[in-house]
Length: 417
Ligand code: AMO
Image (cartoon, rainbow, N blue to C red; front, side, top):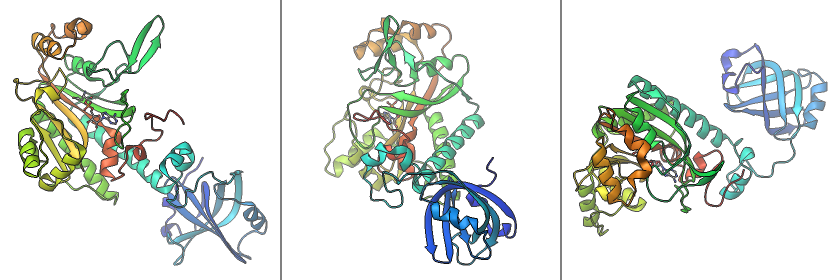
């Protein structure tokens, strides 16, 4: 088993014997002295071969190496003023565990276009920037889970094969389910609400499927949704939790020395009406009841900074389950760098009210009977949010396209790899 990551080979290890394993990133043959740079998930380390110091047969092994060959090296660490990481390893033994053909794409520079990179995604993921994106994404998930646990949430999993729509609208992928048609879940919305009647505070991190025909930089047909729902909270309370999550992630990114979207004392909660005023003053001409575009959301960062909420949307812009007084709903979107990263609300917890909102939107309450029945047996007031994980990573790391933050994106024209 591999015991050291390359980043653990530091000058303090001077004189000790270590075994490292990874891929050949770079080969430099300076005649008598030969170098290779070994890459693993966590970084790089230089291996140096010197006549007199290195066993003769390792020069033969070296001459067989190609970039991306998989190697295992046992050697002695020496602190070095010249090597990039301040250390080099003088090998005592070196094994080629597998050979690599020349790669189909260039992972050593940024010249390859996105479609070609995605076609060869497993190879593309060897790129150091990608290793950084996906290890950081994993740390972000961990921070989110920590905050949820601190706030008394339990992690749950709800079905992804479902019988009816959750969000309304026709953006569902049908699947064959024995004798009938089922659908892939767009959101755990109805299940997470139901669970507030028992588990009170729940969160789920899992895939959501949208059969949207959009082909934009921010839409996927399968994305990772971070969902939270809590009994006895309203939308202001869940915004507090979301704000805590974003703050903690921002602290994490600071320690990681990743470029960060900085957050002020508190995240502004901008009334939808006020946002419209600001936009209209700037010449946009948006009417009450219109959705804001990415361009408008980007414009608003001038007034509110890179991270802000828009709150109190008109009910017509929100799904049927959103609590409202007919003019405004207790709802919010979280915008980071112009992108809608999360949306949430206080929910309707009275059955008759919910049925009324379904009818207003042309949905048949009979289709939702199993959901509505839960409201007859002690449904508490509750609120929650759904956060698009791929969009969050894209916005925080400034990637500009949600596909960069997705291992194997599913979009309108991409079903493989
Ligand atoms: P909504 O539909 O706004 O709300 O989705 C919540 C968040 O999920 C992300 N998202 C997407 N990410 C990538 N590609 C897509 N096609 C896509 N669609 C949505 C966005 C969005 O903010 N049930 C409600 C949430 C709730 O109220 O709890 C819902 O699904 O970041």
